[in-house]
Length: 438
Image 1 (spheres, rainbow, N blue to C red):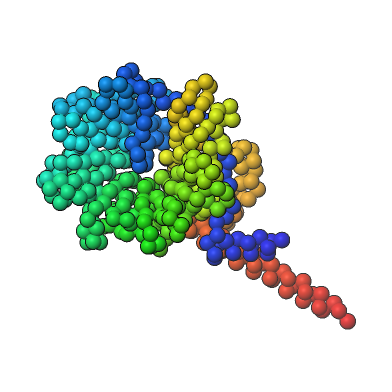
Image 2: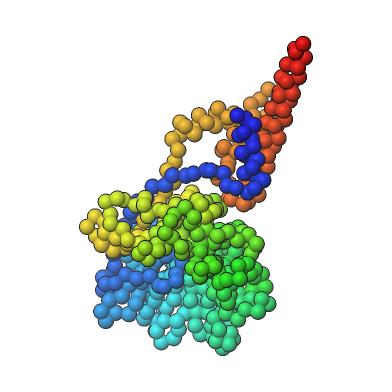
């Protein structure tokens, strides 16, 4: 039995096949997206990526009769109209992304549109339209990680083409990310982790690390691709499949690392997109062929790990569409869902949370495997065994990172030890039996 277990572990390690580390999730409805006074229609800007942050905060916009579109921020405490009150001549606005602490989008009126940054109120608006890059008259901010913002801009200095842009909170901090060295004239930035930025140039997914010269082309398929989000190590987005549909994709910094995430275990979904990644998991949506509805999806690095999160929402609701937009380091997933719940019809902020294992079960497993997280000072002191190290740390290690890989090295070492012990025992037993024969 031990040899079969060792062989299975070794096969997974050497072939790159994922270990079955399933995590149960549960869904909950946070609040309905009700509008501030004067606005009657809730909407999200087409193509936006981060509409809901990892604390359940949502951005979008609202409109109404005789009213310009106004950016709106939703929290469990209610809705806030973000249309700038401190920027003269700006009378319409759109919220496109949020980190939970900051919100971004664009505003316009007598000039613009101009990229804009908020910190929770209409009066906090900061005009991000570049002042240190001459000739930029049009700009949009699409995403923020709470410190850094990304988007795009155009004007005379870009020849009228849209160029990916990076900011650090002010108009004077703008950086033009367009990678002319790759022969790309048009680019857009959609996500940032602080140390990495992602987006698209031409028809290719792009990765930057703060400058235009750092751009990496992530496209290896020869088809169109877009990168929507990054955790600083991995990138997610979509690639177009051979049939022309969009498939959710995962990268680890290079075109060669591309993984097609389009679900192979959820029949009827031939189009998907991933919006966010936290190292171990990726989130986004898949579109059903039968009715064109979107279902929120969670992956664990491969197409065959896809989980339909929509099925985990309250069964008392009648749900039509759902999308997962963000995931935090604890594995909590946030998104939106359309439907009817508790007598209210509309869009709801929703959360999917990992179900913790019973503490007694987890502790029993770790104790049985020799868990002693301490530095030994003599040969008689307790230590943490290799098995306990893997059990305790694999769930927290970022997939593909050095910590994650070292745990697999430990697994290989365990296989070698188990194989050597079993081989020695087998030779000893068979040799002893051989001497007993007449």
